[in-house]
Amino acid sequence: MRPRDLLGSAVGAAAGNPLRTALLMLAMAIGVAAVVVLTALGDGARRYVVREFSALGSNLVIVLPGRTATGGVNPGSAVTSTPRDLTVADARALKRASGVLRVAPIVVGTSEISVGGRLRGAMVVGATAEFIDVRRFTLAQGRFLPDEDWERGSSVMVLGAKLRSDLFGSGPALGQFARIGDRRFRIVGVLASTGAGLGMNTDELAIVPVAQAQAMFDTHTLFRILIEARSRSLLETVKQQAVSVLAQRHGGEQDVTVITQDAVLATFDRLLGTLTLGVAGIAAISLAVAGILVMNVMLVSVTQRRAEIGLMKALGGSQGTIRALFLAEASLLSMAGAIGGFVLGHAGAWVIRALYPTLPAWPPDWAVIAALLTALVTGVLFGVMPAQRAARLDPVLALARR
Image 1 (tube, rainbow, N blue to C red):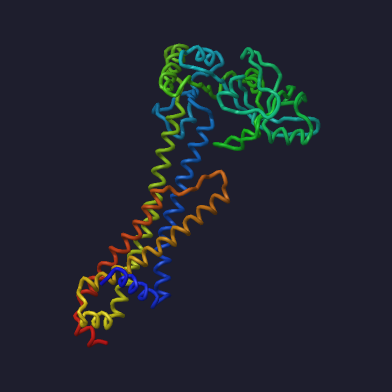
Image 2 (image 1 turned 180 degrees about the horizontal axis):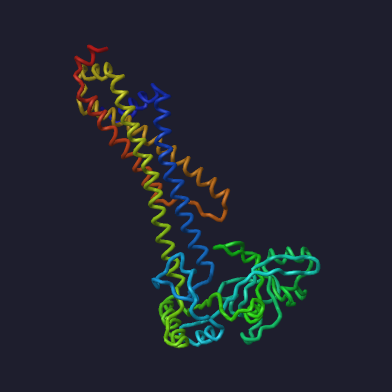
């Protein structure tokens, strides 16, 4: 039988029972759509985290006070014990390392900022002039913190875009004064709006000199030290230099955790990539269920079409022809359902992107191709048994039971 005739027969058989055909295609479509949507979520989360970490800056080495128990890099690396303070003097010593381009010591705390009769809670970051280059911030107005002695900071402040809007409305902010606690700061700059990322909304930051922040929060300990290496190839070198310099300053004890941006990115990329594969595997189970449904429907079809099969064999149809007819029908239904699932899955991913614009929920190509191929292969494999049963029917017995 010619391929054209096989296809026509398969279409005719599918159209002969529209409800059964629609339900079978729906089952296959749900399976494919589940794979597409879940992998879009998983891969979107991976790309979101990678993008946010990349936005922190380039060629970064991060020094945390305290040492993790394993010395490795994991999502809990930020939770450490602190046997010894990480100080501004430590940051200054790191700046002298050969592979270091910039160093930004950081102090973080929360406080209330008041301007006139307006009061606003905000996250206050103590930093230095190099912080803007290390973090790749841009200014919308004014200038950043002055390049001055880290131990004696001026009473100046840079505001995030939303914080500036909340405090001053449509009025000018540059040159105005604001109070943080009992300290008075002159506003010298406003950051360009960048939005939230990794739990910190830079639009709501107030940035002051590190010495002022330490005095404000009554601490000598730094929250972090951000180091920018001169090139990506020097990241591991700078990491080792930081460990060595701080060990010498801390009496030979390695009591800090030093991680590279690449190491953090690789860890999250690996974890979220594995998660994506896991959810894809779970979703693929629904394709197996759909395949079983294909087999059951085709077995019922064989029973209902015994007379037709008997007549075809009586007229000279071979077992191969009968087998090909049923496999063609199973393949057609599976592919139609898979295409429907492809469309449905992309529609679901589009809805997710519309609801959460910051999440790049695009299904990876490998997942889409794998889902379509798995749907087709599943349909064909589970269609083999009904096709074999149809091919083995005795034409006399099949016609006698008409």
